[in-house]
Length: 181
Image (cartoon, rainbow, N blue to C red; front, side):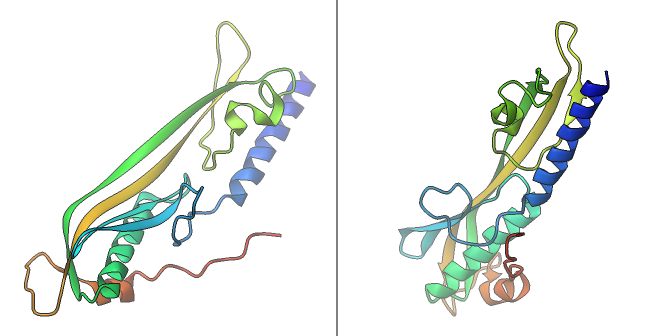
């Protein structure tokens, strides 16, 4: 019984250390091979598709703010002063993991098991199976905001228009912090 308790305590300590290393997605362009960051693409003259995808520890509000910021930057870079959302939405993807605590105490296969599969933002819960060992259940949610915008030039009036300069002034991203040593 002591060994099981020691293994559980060590596993919980490892989860806390790993969760402490996770940081929200920084405001930056999505690089090739990455799944987070912003993208933009011209669809037609004055019309753009803009997206921002966060990781599992980036809150929905931050993802939506970064989408708004990128839309404002695209507008200013294309000679516009205001923009209008033609359509906009935020989607979420939730993953649920159930990892039986095997002989090692860290799930079958050690650190490569389902719970340790590389996802941050753990929300662990413990469950019990009538037919086997205790099970650790966790979930992560990742948000992606996307929009099509219409860039407006000076003099084009639209009641729903958003002032791009005001957005940039009010939604500057926090400075990037260096990773922990």
